[in-house]
Image: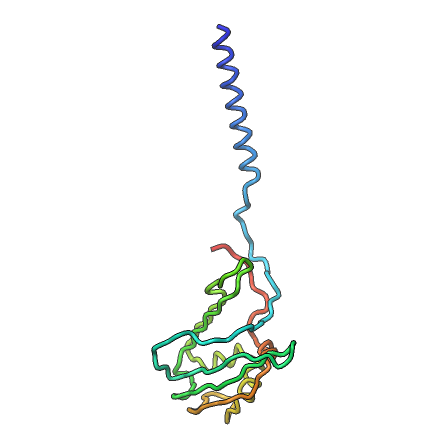
Length: 174
């Protein structure tokens, strides 16, 4: 009789302990409700620009790179060659990556895909559109941009911050 009461007491203790563990684990669980809270404010900081390897002969060619003018000024230098006019018959597809806090690139950080490339890029670029085209010595600041090779001796990348892109992103769980 003594043995069965000990087993019964141990059984009750195990059930109570298991119940407490479940209670605390559920009470400490993460809240799955994640409202769209603003994250940021973000600034566009371009550290490097380099070409992806490609064997395709594209109709728009970028031969650009970054150059440090001073410790606080980074410039974009090089040329852009348009073999066709840059107009609204094109589609723009931009996929930006971000360098993660633990190292490595985070793909698809910001994706921008639009038909009518010229007018849509002009809309999101804001005042940066005009300063960029002026730095590359284009003959026009409106759409379409004609065929040609456009060369810059230096474009201050801080001027790209004067755009209409969102400065605050919202957090959501996918």
